[in-house]
View (cartoon, helix red, strand yellow):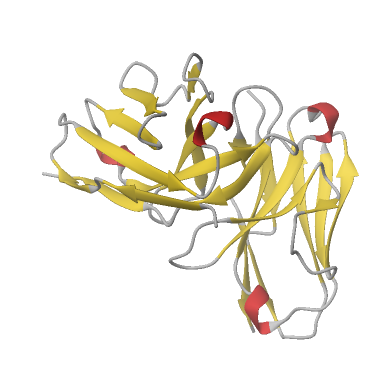
Amino acid sequence: EVQLVESGGGLVQPGGSLSLSCEASGFTFSSYDLSWVRRAPGKGLEWVSTISGSGSSTYHADSVKSRFTVSRDNSKNTLYLRMNSLRAEDTAVYYCARKNTVINNFDYWGQGTLVTVSS
Amino acid sequence: ELVLTQSPGTLSLSPGEGVTLSCRASQSVSSNYLAWYQQKPGQAPRLLIYAASSRATGIPDRFSGSGSGTDFTLTISRLEPEDFAVYYCQQYGGSSRTFGQGTKVEVK
């Protein structure tokens, strides 16, 4: 059974940093691109970042570029998101999602971890 | 940047009714890379439709998608109690992904 479990969320002050993790199981981790998607309170879904299966290619939304860094450790079946210079507008539930190689879209999602940026 | 606009923002309906949700793109969606997701409170999004009209694994046939170019629709033929949720369209051509702002289907 495919499982994605996020962790690392919490309360952080504006300008601070936080690292999220997403531990995967039930599939060959290195064969899949993975992404982070967030949902701010009262708002819709927003794609944040994607990393290729090997980790050699990464992509970030303009809203987080130069502040967030996606990475992965294929030996630990874990995806990461390092978030720096956090702003109030980064407050959201952050989900990790697996990209299905056949349909080129997200087929499995974690349950999310809440990040709150507030003083 | 491609923008997806969903309408209406909220629909109030009763179980058993049919509904059609709209998603309009600011420019043509390449290769019909248009998907629909359902999200319920406290849950992760669930993929319903990909490639504009293909149902994802395990999705009931009361859900159907159609459209091409810039205009897409999601139709639920007969609402079941578990279908009351927020629905998002999403384009996924290229390395980035863009979501619409969502349509909430609520119980009347």
